[in-house]
Length: 535
Image 1 (cartoon, helix red, strand yellow):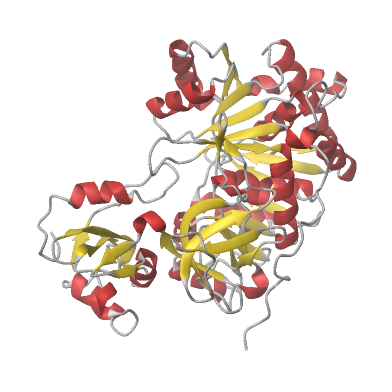
Image 2 (spheres, one colour):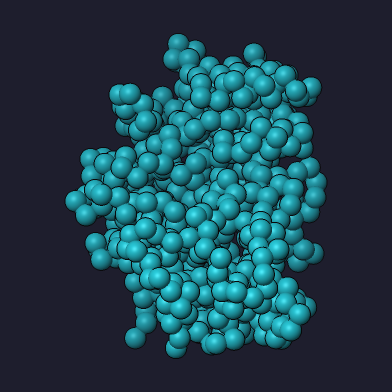
């Protein structure tokens, strides 16, 4: 018998952790004045070591940074301030300082090209760009070509212990309206379907997301959270890092993900929670030190993904660590649908239930809500969902729902399973085929490293189903690997859903955030023969 849903359907929004970011900062400082709240480490440094901020030190650092930005950076309420660099505690300091000023942070994805950074700066016109040492040259080059960018500042300039100790606290919303409505974070989508768009997160959006995420994950001052995913994305910043700080936990921040360093930190620093994505889950469970690493401090691993590969999840479950899931997007906080640890083992493959305070509707093409076991587009309405894109393009429909473009099926118990993107759905011979159903089965095979299923035009069927796979060297794939893949689908998937063509690539094209670029795959394969199983 399956367990009951983890919380009531359409549960109310949990209480906000504070009425503003400045009030939250005061609460953090009061809760842990002399204990570390935020520690940073670069595992690739010559001599890696943690640098920590206590609650009181974080408060003083924010005050000093806000003064510096206003006096020397000439940052005013409403201005945009961009930052470019690897994870660093000063990025959190910067975010709180911008909240105090009433300005807006624009984290740049350090994996993008210079042209892509320039497109973001052109769109939102920041007055200031802060960069770490590794990206100082790139920041200088961007400054040279952008007229609206007044200056570039080293991120380390925000660290001034002498100024911090003497700084007071400024009015966070002086002359700038209620803090909850103030825009604070401008996060650009990954651009898989075209020009990236900047989602505008207010303080209210972010505080609501913290309340939801903290309650679902059971975050408390007793937790130590290990953050290894990039803070330029809402996943790394908003699923655990900010909620953990709001809950009074201690955040350990790695400059970047490294599988060996992450396992070493789990064994040595004893975090209770960490957030991963499919690629990092794979890297951890395939690392030589996986089997020997003590995981006993972890009460759960959370994953930010609509679809999780079965193999690494089972590896964690075998070691007694539940892998929980969060479904969401840049626009939705991103804490929208969640699978908590109490249901992780019974609902493997599911995203879980709409989080407290989040309303989810599955809709058909006409906008009508559908029933259980049917597939529909995921619509989300919640206080952590942005209302618009920069500068004033609406993100919601007339009823306040955000249309995600993802397709999901709701089980009778109310849990949701994402089956793919609406734009990726394949219509072959009049039948709707959802790529995720096929992909989830193929990645169960030990020789399949990753795969993507796409549709290509076909005279007879309208579209034909094509599977593109990257294979591992070990274990060695069978010589007739397409046949072996098809055999694996037999009895698990209706035959009309089976791929009619198979292609092997060394790696699949991805965005800077690791999403497979299916449009690029379609372009690459469009000139291949319409028949013939594999190259």
